[in-house]
Length: 225
Ligand SMILES: N=c1c2ncn([C@@H]3O[C@H](COP(=O)(O)OP(=O)(O)OP(=O)(O)O)[C@@H](O)[C@H]3O)c2ncn1[C@@H]1O[C@H](COP(=O)(O)O)[C@@H](O)[C@H]1O
Image (cartoon, rainbow, N blue to C red):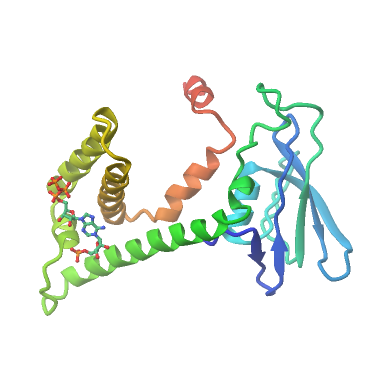
């Protein structure tokens, strides 16, 4: 996934996503406009998930208010999202609950950091997949911690629990912050080995996280049967 304030469309043209304002239904008006001619090609609605999907897939994704149709892809030169909230949408009095939105985060220098974060996770995922493939190749006998984990679910699960505990201890024992980063790296790595065994892509996990963007965890838990 490439996160950037400028998204490349399949036609090769650039699209810029600016800050979005949401109405009380969590929807924003999405206008697709031709970058060269300025012609408005279509207008629809987007919710936060549709927008997140637009960012991750680099394809314009719209949300139908009536749920009759769900446009997945529009080959446009430029996508412009504008919002029309009816007063504050958020209990904080803010126009939107998403004042710390992905767009704020993507603006400016964070875009490059996001890109690097994704590249790092995907590289690690690729290495783990490679180690998995090497298990069935006896000619490759280089020692590998990943291979040991891939072959031993009990060891893997004990490491994930151990590393998660070490991460918590950095908080409980007020350890210096680089220790927290280091322990989180251990948790991520070991958890990603588990994902690989389960054949779950890191992108699938990120998709789940994006789907949760528009809902508080408290609300979600309350709504469970
Ligand atoms: N990111 C990691 C990674 N993070 C942690 N570890 C290993 O996980 C193990 C953790 O076990 P320890 O019991 O030492 O736990 P610890 O918490 O680090 O140490 P203590 O606090 O318990 O003393 C160590 O062997 C670490 O080296 C990792 N091993 C591999 N990777 C990545 O996987 C790639 C392939 O590694 P191999 O499969 O070993 O070739 C590497 O190039 C890295 O990119």
